[in-house]
Image (tube, rainbow, N blue to C red; front, side, top):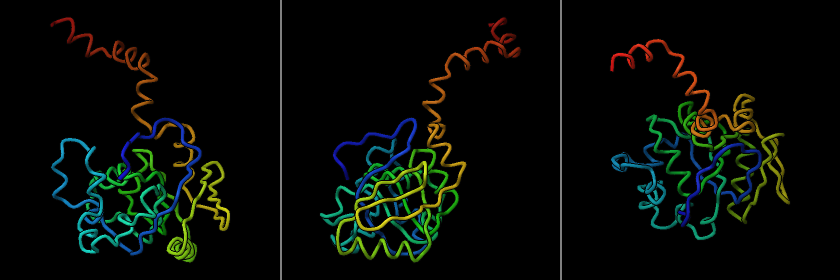
Amino acid sequence: MKSEFTPPVGKISNIRGQCISLIGNDIDTDRIIPARFLKCVNFDSLGKSVFEDDRKTLKGKHPFDLEGNKNSTILVVNSNFGCGSSREHAPQALMRWGIKAIIGESFADIFYSNCIAIGIPCFTLPKKSIQEIQKYTFNQSLFLEIDLNNSLAVSKDINFNLELKNSTRKMFLSGEWDATSTLLKNENLIKNKFNDLPYLKFNTHFL
């Protein structure tokens, strides 16, 4: 887990970072963050517990424990990643470990939506391309530059045309994924709408 965590805000058009590969289909949210960690008051401490049980089983050999992966920010996975429980803690834990983007064969729908809601783009690639990236990362570090405008992932050795839903791309490029910032920027519109609501005016009159 990174020592400092800064959540993403506003428009996101480029992501740069080292890849970390996690091999396996149908990796569910209970593996990403076990249920016993859902009792937390906030998400701040979840990063250190991501894949907790898998990491204990592998005794330091899990990809998230390997020294060469400690600064990775782009997660590469296989099919149906994030299936199972709809818990929003799963993407929150990944983000607090340091993950800024995920590239996979496919994602569970609710997990995908939860990632988008906190600023983690989820790109897809064919199985063969994913396996090529994963094989590469087990032999040497892979640093990618992701261009959301053109859905391109570029490195010194291998390049890929990423797949991303057009509606999702527009949300990241415009900053609309960031609901909190959007609300704060439109504070005056919210106040005006509040003042225009007749039933609120009625209730205020009798207070």
